[in-house]
Image 1: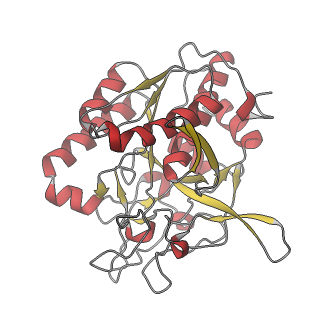
Image 2: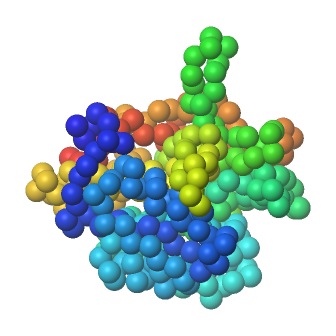
Image 3: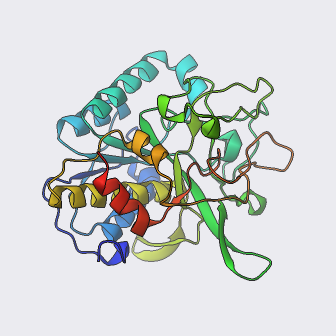
Amino acid sequence: MLLQNLNRLGVQFDDANLLHKTAGAPPVSSGFGETQEDVEVVASVCPGATITVYTGDYVDIVTSATKDGNLVITSSWTWGNDYDAKESAPDFFKDLNLAIKEAAKKGVILCCAAGDGSSSNCRNSSSAAVPAPDWRAHVNYPSSHPKVLAVGGTMKILNDLKQAEEVVWNNSNIQQGATGGGVSPVFQVPSYQQSPEFEIQSANPDGRIGRVIPDVAAFAAYDDYVLEEYGRRQLNGGTSAATPLWASLLVLVNQARHEAGKGPIKDLHKVLYSLSSGFHDIVRGNNRPQPNYPGYDAKPGFDACTGLGSPIAPLLVPALVVAD
């Protein structure tokens, strides 16, 4: 049953706690919908999980959630692009990086949204992905941190044969969002991406090599999720929905590992990047906010739009359960 339908499971979790949501203490008027989305996605996949909602300073939240013994953290809130974070808020950047590293040392998995602002990591007042003022590609932070599982977005379309096909999520042409993704100008290539198959050059003129995001992806179009918000049903999505979906999957993996007499999964990036199956390989689409903007294309194998791809649960879950 675990592998057949993740959305209809009723699993009781004992030590497989899930932390939901990190944020910079947004007011209820702007943050409620974001939090509600994550809670509903998690609850639909893991109805028996312990879901703890944290608000406040991002650094304090990661530190507290780690101290509280949470094994998985899902965060749809992001700071902005990593270069700006490092340059304009160096103390915050240093402290959050340290908190993330400490969490990783204790086996905590932090899942972060790659953002809905396309390769520019920029949106307008209507939340549509648009070019950045400097006309450069940017990546979201803290999803660009090497110890974070960065989650991008996909969507369904009908191809020329009228068949459903999963492609890169990019609705910028209809004034909506598009998945973030690209090459970090701040973080170097992590060990798990040090292979020619994972090497991608920045779309900016410098063509630098660095940490590539996202690592993975899941459905993110605004018609992929029906949520109950403010007492009524409405469509929603974004990488803010794809991220808790991945976090929920990892909670199920940890629960299955517990039942098999194994501890929580460790070195998740190393394991994911070593797998030869378990993902839908997304080979069509791009994450540019407009055609001539610097950005990235989907291609066979790893790319800077959807990473390794979206999960095939019947293959991915057992592979992660038996991983050392």
